[in-house]
Length: 507
Ligand SMILES: *[C@@H]1O[C@H](CO)[C@@H](O)[C@H](O)[C@H]1NC(C)=O
Ligand SMILES: *[C@@H]1O[C@H](CO)[C@@H](O)[C@H](O)[C@H]1NC(C)=O
Ligand SMILES: *[C@@H]1O[C@H](CO)[C@@H](O)[C@H](O)[C@H]1NC(C)=O
Ligand SMILES: *[C@@H]1O[C@H](CO)[C@@H](O)[C@H](O)[C@H]1NC(C)=O
Ligand SMILES: *[C@@H]1O[C@H](CO)[C@@H](O)[C@H](O)[C@H]1NC(C)=O
Ligand SMILES: *[C@@H]1O[C@H](CO)[C@@H](O)[C@H](O)[C@H]1NC(C)=O
Ligand SMILES: *[C@@H]1O[C@H](CO)[C@@H](O)[C@H](O)[C@H]1NC(C)=O
Figure 1 (cartoon, helix red, strand yellow):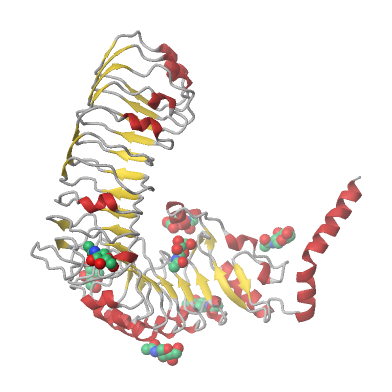
Figure 2 (tube, rainbow, N blue to C red):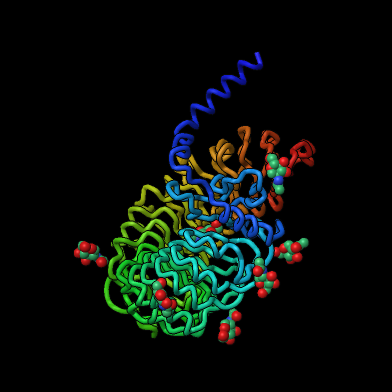
């Protein structure tokens, strides 16, 4: 029988690979010996070191040593991991060695720089931080995509400006080890006119004049988070004709007067103060409400947390696409138009001074609400599509709305530190297949703990501390196998020690 399996195996693979086989037999363009040798030389410049790529975990990427599989015995380097060749010429046109655990230095005479046909090069998240970004990168003049994210240190050389075909340049520096001097920045911007994506996050550009960014008229994505920008940004930056996304987060001195039409705006931790946007007009910094939005129809992501905002958020009801809205540490009134945003999916207004009652939101896709730590009061309205609901540290009163029983995807319910009363709806105990956190700590709930918890795969945390609950601890909790926290202290529970809880493996 074994030979038959082998035969089938053989037929299957030969048939499957036939087109490629014919292709190569016709064109006969495999990796050239020069390229093979350059790549192997490159490989031998580094040691493999897991901690060189530890950041990959942090950003949800798998790290593994791609060059380990590069091997003299398989001479066609086009088949090696991380390498892509031009099918017609056999030239290496793309090299992706991100997260490859490479540790060492890249000197100007590195064999990498002989791969002149490279169009895409990704060396992100390795550790070459003993070397600066070599001027030799400027020789790879076919590059359209260059990603050196968090791998190098030192000044960015002016030679990068020779790469005039670049469409995407990622120089993110997690450790803040990279710097861009004004002159180099200037020449860079003059030549890289094709750039659509530019990330300089955590690169020290404190001494540059941002107005020069205006040369980059093709930019659609600009990330200048935590770059130490000093200058007041010119209005003009927002008039980059194709800009869609802008991140100016964590630049404590950034401030501007402008109107924008973007689809994504992150201003978290800037000195953006005064009022937030009205439909049209200009922002000024004395605390007057005015505008940064000239085309709010496009905006879908708005994060203006950690600023010094005050006053009312004016009507920007035309933010019809906004799905993600965050605002933290501002002194504001909860604006009525928020309730009418049709696409709102994520709303975080935690740690503000919002007062008054809240109402039912119109959005049919609202999954996440965080209104923690405000001064909201009154009854809790229905949230028919909610998944994560954080209303803790307010002064809500009344009972848990019975409509909560109709919500099918509830995962986190945090009503702790309010003045809620009444009994805990039994339905919450039936949710234990989806519900993972039930936090009702520090309220005035009375009556019994729901008696029948259905067998739960998800329920991790039940906190009922500081209420007026009485009766016994429901035995059915023993079926919630993943329970990690059960706090029922400071109630009027009258029970013996629930010895049966000992059998819960994760408690
Ligand atoms: C491995 O990399 C880490 C940081 O990337 C470095 O501190 C350490 O010295 C390296 N270990 C070796 C054996 O090269
Ligand atoms: C190359 O591959 C062959 C066969 O897979 C293996 O025996 C050899 O050890 C490899 N060489 C290196 C340097 O990895
Ligand atoms: C590259 O340059 C370094 C330092 O300048 C030198 O030590 C090394 O031998 C050179 N390597 C090659 C392959 O020329
Ligand atoms: C650069 O590579 C890193 C790691 O793979 C990735 O997270 C990042 O998105 C890349 N940048 C660009 C612009 O593609
Ligand atoms: C701009 O790019 C061209 C073509 O790549 C190059 O010849 C020139 O030196 C570059 N200019 C600067 C200032 O780098
Ligand atoms: C950025 O560079 C400036 C001047 O070159 C320097 O004074 C400053 O300390 C640097 N900032 C950081 C965070 O390294
Ligand atoms: C919303 O857009 C409509 C049509 O584009 C416009 O007439 C209206 O004034 C806008 N409302 C606000 C508050 O900007």
